[in-house]
Image: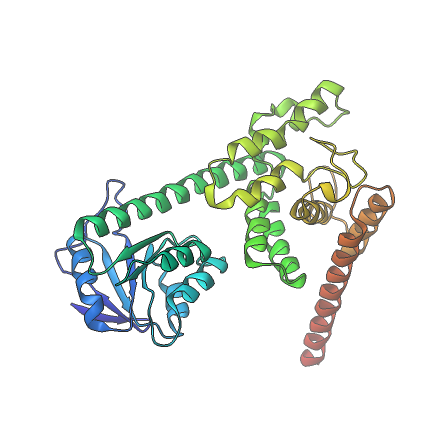
Length: 352
């Protein structure tokens, strides 16, 4: 039967959907081609394999449709009337909302130029038309299996990190606050979508290495011994190793390893100084510190934004933080506070 969903033609068979071994819903595949007759062979082959199939032309609305429908894979024709298939692939891979979706580009001709462009736009595979059923089925299944495996690994790591966070915090919401702050500050700095996404994901897993630190040390209220301090310092190395399987998120690893380095080289684990410290780690540590300072903990009250910025400024004067990043972050927070105060004033005026 045919239905319309978000402007897409949705093809399904009443007795069709095949559920995988984990009882997941059938994978959803989007075929993008502005010639309906050209979509038919791929659609029929994929329906035979039990997939849910969406169809779309190559118009600009395809981006909104992909974001709304979240397909597990996109089968994208290279030659489209409105926008080049390679350009669509490039834009999808640059957007944090769609960057993890596997994309198979397809064309009638198999040229060296096409295959070069597939690599340039981070396409996941290239197939020639007309499609061979075995080849199409094999490539699609492999990419979808890889995607679901990566998603499963990511979720397990995030769940472990949240358990670790709940050990040292009653609220257990610090990672959510850091993630939100990372996205807004990244946009304020006009960072690339990929860099922002690395900061956001790092918020969820940066302290996952604490899983190896005993409660007696991690939650100790008194002064740590040198041996205990050294053990805690190891959590960044353990966290980096745990997150190594995150193939598409390798940019997160330097953040995990280096977010406790200091600008003057007195941090850990490698004693990096200045711009030897990866830029995202420099930014992330400010976000992490600010969130910790402005959050209530069992042993302390939350500082106000102004007080938190003063403490960060003091640490910068000691040589611990990048002065330029701190200056940018301070301007960002003050602008946000001014906007908040303005909105509150408007609400009071409206009530009166």
